[in-house]
Image (cartoon, rainbow, N blue to C red; front, side, top):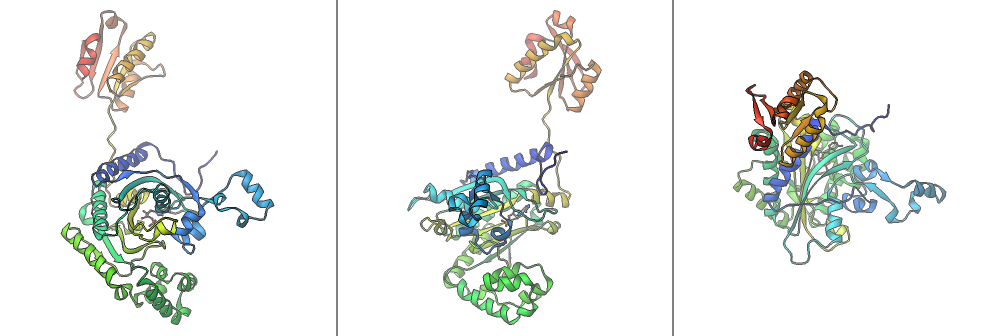
Length: 434
Ligand code: AMP
């Protein structure tokens, strides 16, 4: 039997319904904050991700799925491998949404000089070649927003407030949400701090895990993310960026906190919070669901003022967040908060004789034209089985077509809640049901 790729999921039934519901909630809530939907391609040039996420990140180095046509694959074998391909031939499935959107903003000049910020949201599958495990998939779904065109902390705060509101709309109780914030500095203050941290790590090199020994050179801030206990102990003693923030970054961070306070959004300052992608600066944040910490952060984001330039555009500051649909559902399940989906209740058309099928077909179309949800039997079941089926489908009404009733211009209408049954004129049926 053919099987799906490990680490991927088929979405159907109530899970699919829920994904659609989550997208509906996003459209409604984000729309109130001025965010419009955007969809960028699932494949981009590798460089789009390398420029933004960073050559040294795990995502780019190990986890990106590369894409090649069969013809190009054959040619690249003959011509000595990937390094001989042109940039436009080196493609990857997107591991995250921001880089592609910033590429699109630059390409279409969506924030012309002096224009108000552009606010967009997306709901789309992302792809990472990770080892599949619970809450870690190779194809998963993210919902995210990007606001580009202003460096102001009010934009960061607005977006965080909106995210917290969204989590509550998804079913997380207010008190279960823990927001952590930090500032990652900018090009003025981070380089010096980076050197300081790197120096600190080199003095303890022998005690670091292999990955961190490498990170200490390439990107020492990543060591804060290491899960190794020894490294965590070392990092608890490490100098903090907060103490080296420049005046502008400090002011931006204070402003952010001020806006969050005035919106009544509780947060915890986490000076060791760094996010795994290179493009972040100043504001970074993550949200955990208390009681479901084992699934990992349910969402996070931050500011990326330099990213548009890395994608070849002019300076366009931006801020955004992304959350993983599958993680959210896992967290809600862990908290015992998964709600049954409300299925719509159909009107079921039952036949007392099989030669009335075309009559039933016609009636079904008539009712659907009136926006009713209509089901009928397609398998020649007995009248008794048709009622069973109507029950299983949760039908609100059953219309029974019988030869004698139809000859008299009537049908039988059964209310499945009250179990009342009465004759209704066929010509009055639509009116009755409305
Ligand atoms: P990141 O871009 O890594 O911060 O991811 C943002 C969100 O996407 C996370 O908070 C998770 O909810 C989700 N996520 C990231 N990687 C995966 C994965 N491999 N499988 C499922 N969800 C993921």
